[in-house]
Image: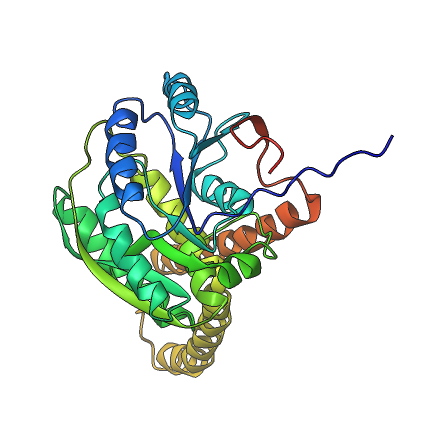
Length: 321
């Protein structure tokens, strides 16, 4: 008996990817506002909610939403793999002609997405949202964020717009290019700029978090910044070479100076204190640069192991599409 072919399900125009971790307090309001926004878009859409190993009842809430809303699809990780991996999974499973990444905490308003879509319709292939104002953020976070963007601009050839985040729209061509990049230490906002294509910016006001706590404390912010710099720059390694030449030059200058001082009877360089300070300074510098080398070697080791970027334990709403 001849098997009838299953009709292909038409791909949506828009895919909205929402990574989340322990966002039970935010999920109902996020879905309400997201649904209202999707109803006003100029094409069919799907909403991929990525549960990054949440330990609260986020997954139960997502199951309920998927049962009520046919546009909602859920990916649930086997454990917490991290925000950048959750974004990656959503992009991997997205079918839309345009893919939008936005966080679940409602700091980035879903109502801005139609503006990104308008810029895309006008010809832009990557539309990033730039924060004109950041409500509810501390002076420390604003300052460190500004310094980070200027630091990475000075150390790499990437032109990541200052005050932009992961909130952005990507054309299908950008998504296809990103799916070819499978490195483990991922800095998605840098990768999306690195692949190129025609880019545009949309400014917006970033709100306070709707509920819950930030998922990026200082420790994670430092790790995130380290991943961004080491993924796109060799400057930290080049600093080691520069420092080596500087201290070698100082040593060459110091040799005749010390010899002359001793010949004339000066006791300036006598005693153990000077020797100990010099050894400690040089030893500290050497350890710092060994640590930098270790960061790069660790990333090579992670790539060589070729482990999967993430593991999905449950898929809801995807069916056979």
